[in-house]
Image (cartoon, rainbow, N blue to C red; front, side):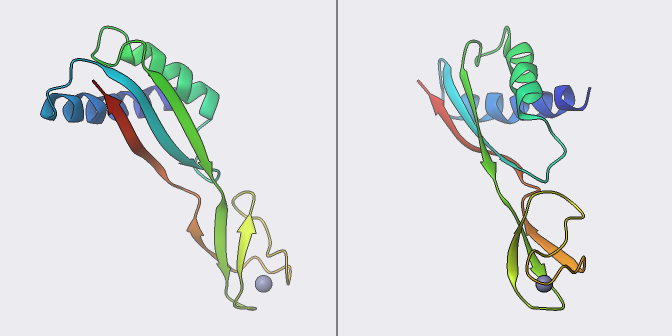
Length: 113
Ligand SMILES: [Zn+2]
């Protein structure tokens, strides 16, 4: 399961950050997940709950913020919103798009005590 390994590597970052800051417990983790990333938010949430068991982040609130997909259209030069990979430019219908945002998968903030 793809989300499980993602959650595992995220937990490593969370634990490392918590250790560095002498945290006793991790209260919440906020993650940014672009709509073009190939991860399912619900599956990722579940995976995080599983991998955080028996760690400093046990019981932490795990929140996900979705970032919209954005791309630059080469033929018409517009920056446009795209809902998924391979979507055409909403302005001119071209598929020659350079994706500029939306495939992010990163920890935005960690709340510790
Ligand atoms: Zn266009």
